[in-house]
Image (cartoon, rainbow, N blue to C red):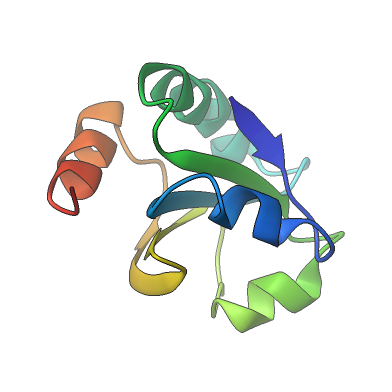
Length: 103
C-alpha cells in the first residue's frame, strides 16, 4: 500500500520496516502520472517495504530535506538513512534491484 505522506506523518511510513521508498511527485507532472501505477504495483508486490508518495507542491520542506530538485524523484532509505536518489520514471524491475540489494 502506498501512503500519501506529508510533513506530519513521515514517521508512519518510516516505521513500516527497514527499507523505505519515497516517490516525490506533483499532480501537474506528466512523467509523475506515468510513474504512479509502477510505484503502486511495487508497493503491492512488496508489503514488507514502506512506500510513500510525497507531493512536492504541498510538502516543499520534505523535498528540500531530501534534496529533491526534479520530479519524479525516488528516494531510497534504509533505517531512515538516505541510501540513494533516482531521478525520473524507474521501471519496477529496477526498484526491485535497488531494494533487494538492501535486504
